[in-house]
Image 1 (cartoon, rainbow, N blue to C red):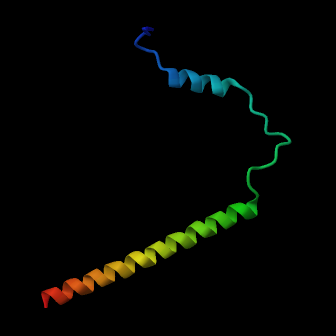
Image 2: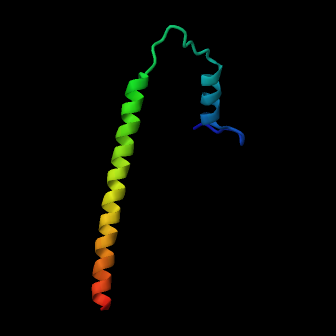
Image 3: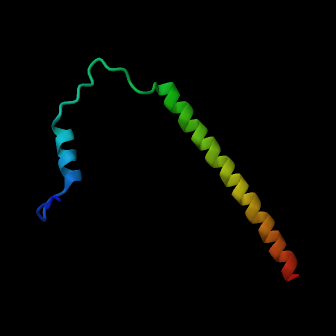
Length: 71
């Protein structure tokens, strides 16, 4: 069994070790091209718009049912 001091934080120590290693980006290719990133952003916007339309449609149907019940 291992007992550490009060200030022991293994997550911080491993993070600090990772930060001290040099990162070389020279000569490496980007993870995504600009066109691929644009495609992903457009797709996410399209999906978000579709979800918003569905939510508005559902809310309108429920509001209509509620108004019918009140009448």
